[in-house]
Structure formats: C-alpha cells, structure tokens
Image (cartoon, rainbow, N blue to C red; front, side):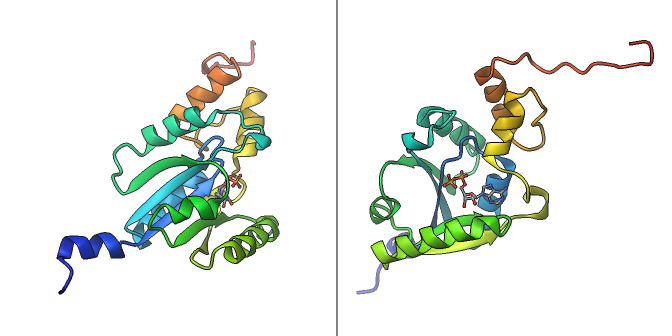
Length: 183
Ligand code: ADP
C-alpha cells in the first residue's frame, strides 16, 4: 500500500542538524540557518553541552537565547546534546550535519571532524556552507572578547545577546555620548 501523504512527508522531510557551541549565537550562525532553510525543510540547532570548552553561557542560557531568537520560525528546532554528535543524530531523522566555513583556518579542523563523524557513522554526511562576506571575521570568541572589554557588539549579535553579554560582564547599558571639542 502507498504511504499516506502525511506519513510520506514526515519520513522524507529533509532535516539538517546544525551542531555547535553557540556561545553565544551570532549573526554568522543565524545567516547559515536562514540560508539552510531554503534547502532543508527543517533545521535542528543542536547546542553542544561541552563543559571542557568552558563556555561563558550555560547550556540553559544558550538554549533560552536561541529559542527566543527563533520563536517565530517553526522550521527551526532548538535542542541540546551531550556526547557524540553521531549518537544524537541517530535519535533524529536528520541525514546531514551542517557546518559553516569562514577562512581557510576553519578548514583543517572541520575536515578532521567531518572525517571522524563519517567513520563513526556512514549515515551522517557533513555539508559546509560558506559564510556570507559580512560575517567572515565574526566568531563567538571575538564577540566575547570585545564585549568583555566593553566594546560595542551591536550588529554582530541580536539585541537579546547584546543584553545578556552586558549582564554577564556586568557592564552598564551603553549610552551614546556626545563628544565635542570642549570635552
Ligand atoms: P563549535 O565550537 O562547534 O565550532 P561554534 O558555535 O563556534 O561551534 O560554530 C558552529 C558552526 O558555525 C561551525 O561550523 C562554525 O564554523 C560556524 N560559524 C561560526 N561563526 C560563523 C560565521 N561568522 N559564518 C559562518 N559560519 C560560522
């Protein structure tokens, strides 16, 4: 018997997993998700719970921010996972792990990870998307560094993340100061 339309679309939905630390999420990550949604029916943002990386934000805080940012995008599912990505992927119907590539410096690490994941599970393929030119130099690490030193990160991360970074580093809310020749 033919499968019902509903069942068929459920089983054949193209789902991609976008794993990462997202500590915190930046417009570079969001750009990848938005472009992936043109290709895939669903994107699962899977936040890695890896304490060894000594994240600035707890996994709950990261989940909260990412969920809030994508609350009006039903095709994006936000989740977290511990341990091996291949084990997490096995619990979903995703066939593709999505990763972003910035400079060639990302390549070596990503190449190793993709090869390792492929040898752990032939079910999982890694798909790379090149970053948009505006986000070439954007990383969670530099955002944290700039925010920690009190620099402006508006335009690099959503407003919610700007606020959370300020709270984390106990920085005052930015006030625009008029600087004239008399100051
Ligand atoms: P991880 O710790 O797993 O590298 P990240 O949160 O730093 O997690 O990044 C998750 C993925 O998003 C990685 O594939 C990374 O290369 C990609 N990524 C991060 N920043 C950008 C950006 N500005 N443009 C495109 N891809 C990015």
